[in-house]
Length: 483
Image 1 (cartoon, helix red, strand yellow):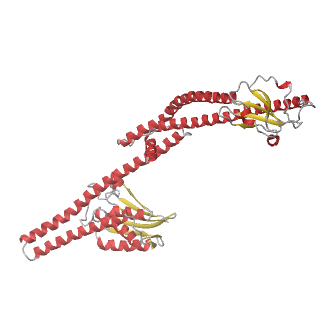
Image 2 (spheres, rainbow, N blue to C red):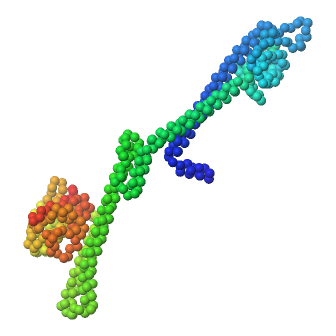
């Protein structure tokens, strides 16, 4: 639990503090490792020096003792221990030389006057066999105070053993002082690193602070705010470039969403208006019939016919709305091979029967085909023909053509009616859009969604619909199917 609390506290601290602490921790680990390693190397070096000194002393002492010999008087008892010769009388250092007889008894020793404890207390009783087991390798004898570094050898005359010892008091004092020096220097350097890293991190965090300021502006609603252009080869530069690209796309998405919401609001308002008109008429006619304001007979039949027409108009509108909703949901089309020439001819025949007041001519090339949903394409052509009849006066000529433009299959419905303005051409495919008065409407049965359905179906087929028009010179709508 405590560990989780500490981790939570750590993650809640600022990035600047965490980076500073991280630099200090890594630096401290580096200094500790360097100090420990340096001390270890120094200890090995000093121990090696002591060992060389001990081996030099023990070798020279053994040679002198062997040359001088241990004086034996023929008349003395051979069991009396021998006495060391005069060369061992003066060794005024912390190095001590001890001579043991073959039985481990102390014969004599000199030196070691500077030591707080005596080596003789730890080496008495060593037999020549035990001494020989150490060979020529120095070893350490642990003591309550400073330890001893010891080198031993057996006298060539086999009269005993020589033990040369060096107290490690000075060695321990030197290593402690070195450790203290490292500690003081490391602490001062860590303080300097803390200050320097704080300043460096502060400078390095400035781009992030600018990013934070920009993010606050965006959060406040300013979607046009952008990050500064930093060096593109740096991490912050690449981050700012990516964020600016992302912000541009977010702004475009918000704009598209706002436009979509505006279109939806207009669509709902227009649909409500279109539905309200027939519903109001139906309600009014029904109210007249209920109140008995219309006498039985021909007047009643006329009233019923009006109610039927308004109901049909409302039904057409609902069907068109459902069609657009399905297209918006990207419903799958029934794709098959479609002979556009035959399909367009069928649509023209139906339009001639439905609108005898308009002259419809054809210029249909044989063999024009595409892949698509035949029912939807038929509805598209029918809508264009209905739109031409609805927005042109009686007697207007409508020309329908099919042809192949390179790889694309095309259908054109043209008229010589009043034409469209540039503003109308830009918005003609919007839902419920109404053109200006020059494009008079002759039909009351339309839903106002015909061209919107044409545009939606063509996009679903991967094609497009376009319009070319001039005021007073008619309009031409072209369907282009990508093959």
